[in-house]
Length: 162
Image 1 (cartoon, helix red, strand yellow):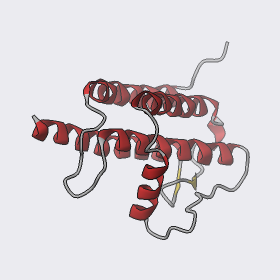
Image 2 (cartoon, one colour; image 1 turned 30 degrees about the vertical axis):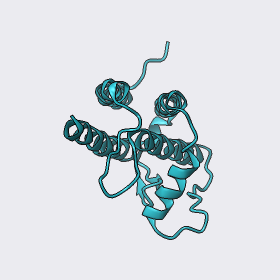
Image 3 (cartoon, rainbow, N blue to C red; image 1 turned 120 degrees about the vertical axis):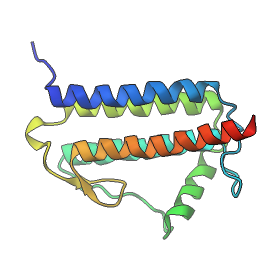
């Protein structure tokens, strides 16, 4: 019987703990909560944004594992804010239920790739959606930092709206 190396178990456990905390907030929030005073971004938009980013990370990890080159398709957009806005609008018609389902699915895919990731390649950097090369641990930690930042924004917007 194969057991998961401790490193991978710890990485997944950390992701799960952070997600559990985030999920309880997300499930309690109004998806139409405006998160930023200076934009139209809602809680739903931010969760969809996190999902898109994790889906990109899934693609990057899969490309590395298949010895293929990963490149984020910016579709001609040259700045990150414009890129994020373009992707926000692409997902704007999704229901809250779809957004939550996809958010959970992206995380499940990420978890599966951590399990499948070759242990002998854990220290090899690969191209990520952060536009730089990271090892698996750095990439997953980056996803956690990114999620924490946006969950904190949602939390602050919720507190100021009450």
